[in-house]
Image (cartoon, rainbow, N blue to C red; front, top):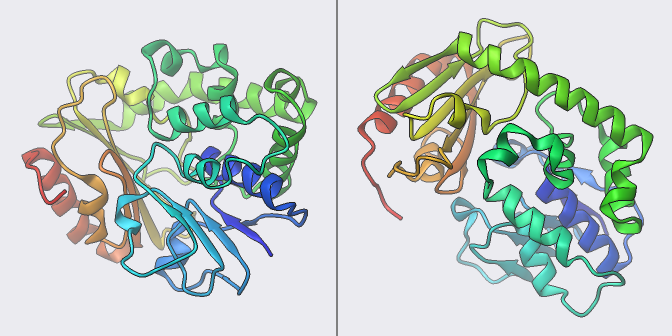
Length: 298
């Protein structure tokens, strides 16, 4: 029995809850949603999938992304909740050895981008927000670190977790990275209509940073688009779209928009990966839909 989830904070919390409720001790199998769309996800009988699309070979499934909804019976829970962790928490409500209510509260807020402006501008003041920024599959695959965070959140309170040397080191890196990221955004972002478009494709190593910072830097916009190559080989383009959390006037369900381009997600946040030779066709269509800002199917 394996836990299969994605490397983000919601995935980490799902792994914490599933490992506790079901007594699973083996390492998490970390997978990206794109592995499902490509058919390369290694899913085996007995696997428990969380925060990822459904796979017919799994034993249980927990998710909350509207574009992943299915119409067949399954064991687990799908619900349009703030986080996939909330669905795991509700399903196994009486099975936990520890009180995870605070952890799931923050998973809800972080995954649904329910932030104050101060939390966006100064994440170093908020332990859970800063910790969440240290878990990402966008750059290096730090599976040992992700596993360590899962283990620590099962055993320690947040203050103890933040005091661990490896967590402190990752947090220092994130704070430094966020300080530099604002300059990158200003240099590589253009505005079309009320859309902030950040295009990092000219950079061999595109910068990472606080994904909500664009909403503060470009307050007149209602949605942001970030474009980059997946790796230096430049074979795959990655597009991330998010509704502004401070100017909530975007009418486009971006998850449904990106399903036409091999992606998916929520109404307010979504991503897609596609071959680089399709970018000249796909990107204008995506940006045009966002600039028009017309609601589509719910």
